[in-house]
Length: 275
Image 1 (tube, rainbow, N blue to C red):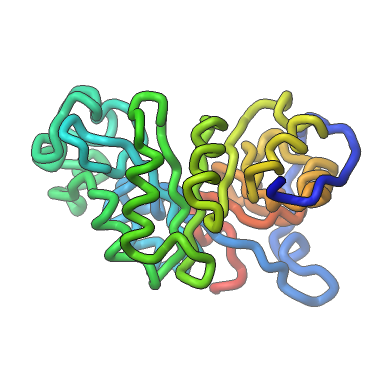
Image 2 (image 1 turned 135 degrees about the horizontal axis):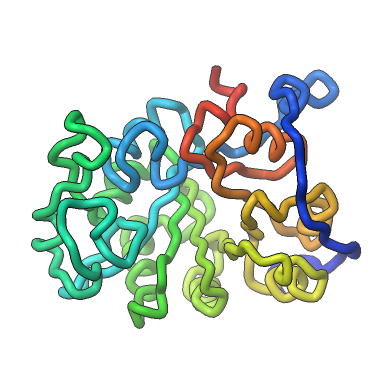
């Protein structure tokens, strides 16, 4: 059992109005400690999952960068969100059907502006080597069911860098695929694990109790977050990180809800700690 099992309550659906950032961010005169997670890097300001986006996130003093990991046809772990390259490069095709060299041959930046021309799909080891020690890394296993054995491969890359131990730089692994996260927990028992969901059915006490057996984070869409849900997640000794913030109103709402981390395309919306 990974966490203490406590808690009771009923999850509610969410309808909200904006809150003032100053009021949301300050409690009893003290700034709340909320981790600022740059979603696919600072994806509101640079092409997602590229070095440009990750560099921008570091410049904006994010606590973590969030990356999406998949695998090329020839077995290289790469950073891209969609299971195809169609949306974020000038190429087409399934990530799993293209070699690493083919994936690297496409432009992953020009779609967002000519100033980003030449940005490439990064490799997983490249991101680990460039950013660990500079910023936390939230690793999402994207569609792991398409990539048998990817959990072992990610674990090995972390172990090679001594990033599988809690005294090292901040690493968290998350996925919508719960069985994949159970596997990660068995492979990397000291690395925090997160489960992603947008479903209200995953917010019952029974579901939270099950997640807490192997997960350290419960990471829901902000659209299903309530104060009651946050309290119950905490009662099961898990933290809560919510996604994806693309407006100041959403950031302010989550600050008001006392979540532990906010996953956002715009790290400056989550401040005010770094302003």
